[in-house]
Image (cartoon, rainbow, N blue to C red; front, side, top):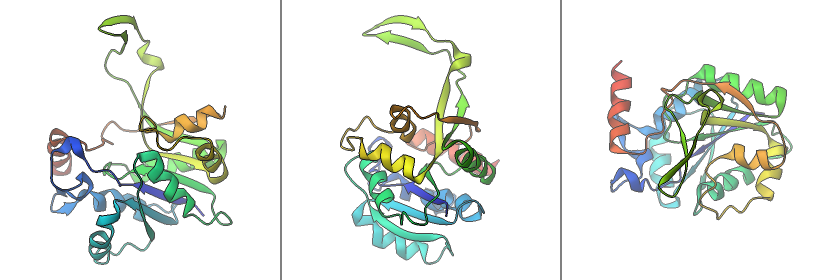
Length: 225
């Protein structure tokens, strides 16, 4: 069984809103439900776990009951960091039936079914795979207020989600991680520490993470297009 963990336990402080960003309206519906739709349609995903702020679970479930989400298996209260929240979702999975775990940001509503399928397939083959897109800007390595060097852009990728792993591999990575470290924002980094190869699957730059009011405007434009 392939399981998606939707990490949506953040407070959205950069959005400057009184509601967590995953519940802000996008084309008349909370962002989180736009995010869940491609996972609902993706045949490679068999079960979905949503990790939310504890005080938002009841409201989410009330709305979810009207969305026809057949794959929604459970809602898990999040932790103090993203890594803590994802680990809580991971621990709610039944190990006996788990194969691939796909971790996806709750505010990335523009991932496609094909991208999910391709990343899961790569993880089934190689054990670990992440969706990524080439860097388009020139990237500088800096120290303080000075440039140390210009990085070779052709070797750089911007990490997106989903990030997909064999269950046992991701579980091992989290067992060795300090989930209270707020700098841990990426499952791939934890798996890389184990020395395991992480395969890149090319994704679209449209798969944006909505974190600021400007991102929300861009998202509205995408939907109009």
